[in-house]
Image 1 (spheres, rainbow, N blue to C red):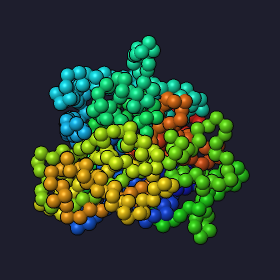
Image 2 (spheres, one colour; image 1 turned 30 degrees about the vertical axis):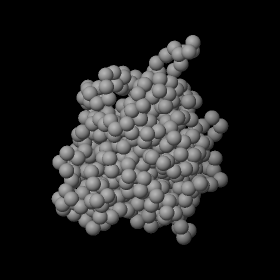
Image 3 (cartoon, rainbow, N blue to C red; image 1 turned 90 degrees about the horizontal axis):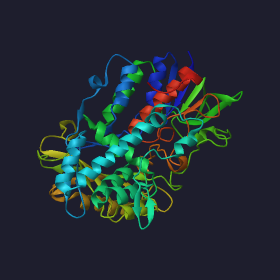
Length: 495
């Protein structure tokens, strides 16, 4: 039985902790804040409850697998999990709109064909077919296996872009924006793809075409909602850890990783106390290993972001509304920017977008509202990160951005301003950055550092390590770290 110190109680870290405890190890989680869950937080006011991180669950199989592998009680016995159907309603700048069903390619194609005109559904269906090919080619190395030593083979984009002859030249789409222009050939279809990429923290102008995996993943495996809000999933994972005898130290800030005899040997806490360990799993900043060389020449290293700039963040407006939620309301609506390129230029250029893409979440859940005469609504947009050119602590700036989101959301929620009792604002200053998921292509610039480091005994977990950001990816990173520690060099990936 090994002693394992886990830094941070985020979802990836807890996923690793539960699996390692089941394997017979003694696991202690050190979390500097007063609670667990990382990005899966909640805000409560006047009987309303809001998610402060992701509002929907994609690839629930990741978390089902965790609960299956760590005990007899399945995920659905621990949280209320329901499909979101319809999956989303999209409103475009030209006044057109489309409502997409959940996890039905045929239904999606039909809806697009009816709403956006002849040929729109067929083009999107063909695009999803190419995205499926990219998924099949890259799923295991990107999501289910440790990052290969010869990761350079992932520098090639698995998306089978169409060859098109234009102006005496043969062209192929290499980026998300180019796929929209060359293959989807409709600004509204392009907005569907570009808006999805932006929501994952990617710049559609630069992100590889393999980002087609993201809408494919959502539209194939569906969108799911956790009753009571996504914080309930964090609670269930935390309780599973406790049931498997994982120990938690809240208010325990790790100031450095202890290195002895050339390997990670524990953690030092604020105040000077040292917790000895045989392995350290870091779900936090690798600067804790100051002075240690964690990567060698040729390794994938941490970056300021795939686009060599500051990572974007998420801006949220939490609204308590008077009046019952209409029966016709859709759980998720997306009000698309009239110019996603300009929006991306602002987000990744340290500026505010004049007209951002806004996601409106309206869960039909009695647990998140004081009574049926009220409704809880969350508005979110991807924005430039905190610091540098933008200080999200500026009250006037926060309110100006909130007004832009509320204006946009008014096209999706009737009488929004008249019904609003109050609103609360969350910015990247409170919620942090949005790390993107790993993607193949463009020479591997969209990959994240491996879960194993060159310092023996130190492993990385969470959104800033392989396979990257997002709730599903965090769960996968936990499975990979546990496999590497339990099976060592023989580990070939999750089954």
